[in-house]
Image 1: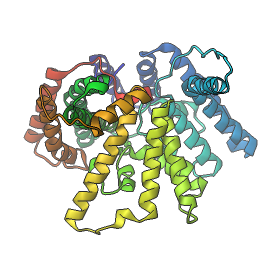
Image 2: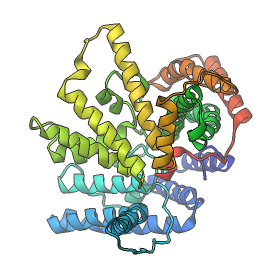
Image 3: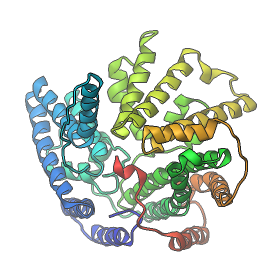
Image 4: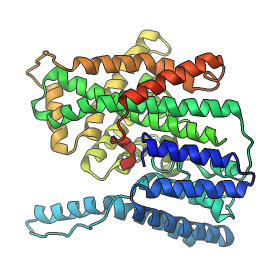
Length: 460
């Protein structure tokens, strides 16, 4: 069930109506859990069985960690979740690597690939389990005694499949506290839901057709069209994921639940470090706190560069099982290490023209790495790079004008609409302006809605 489908919007509306007419917090949690199960099981019901099983096992292990404080129980919990992720997401890729090694040494061996599906959102809910285990073992959070509350924490449908990655100390206290209906918060939540849906449907989904054409014809793309397709994907993935995250925050507010912000105008970043503090913020913070810092963080003159490269390479593999994602993460790690080694992020201070140059460099570096992220294979990525960087340079244009217009409109709305998403900027407007803006966005959504297009991050 997609966020951009009528079925989801109806389920959400019914769930909201029942939620605010129930006085018991326990029954509210039962409703949220049931709604989340329906939402997740709608895609592929066997995936729901796996999720329920993991909730039960992780609840028991977290109880054991809290009661006995034994390191081996903690390690079992970490390994169990990682093995589940590796099996469903990386087993096929690992078997391909092993098979290639046999071929390299002139051994003809065919390793049977496991026949399984990729559970939706497995990377996101695995990281949420891991974060809870680590924080519990270190004494940063208290053990959640109620399995009902624990289950809702894990599979609350607003953030189940693609985040934001909400930590236990952020969400559990809210689930355990009964809130009263707040009209102002509900208004903002509804606007974020509609605004995020607008960004997804009217920007990301329109750009997707040009991006798909560009990458499917990577070997024959003209220079200008290749760059336009690449710019198109840069704004498509931002619009798609920013739109989803905004909807998730909006859904939360409509229930009286605060979810963390996941984006902060990442293409305005003046350094690669700044970019990762603005893009997929909850994931960046997760890798910082649970991988980069335990590796040693910024300690040591040379260790910091190694830690950056390792962290970002693993972050790349987290996104997908393939060489493309490995190179995408490795590329970001190398850029971060180079930037830190020579303090490139400090050049020019606050001089505006220097900041603009740095923004252009960061943006285009990020765009070039997006090629690995979007291409279906490494060979396709190489073909696309050839069209981007090698002659002949043919500057003819055809139907790509619409792509330019769409990107231009996004740039215009990026600041205007994005600022309304922040703080109380929307609710501080007059009721007439609130209704006018919301209705306008809703009409655009109706005009361009296509519920067949998934959110990009749903496959991770």
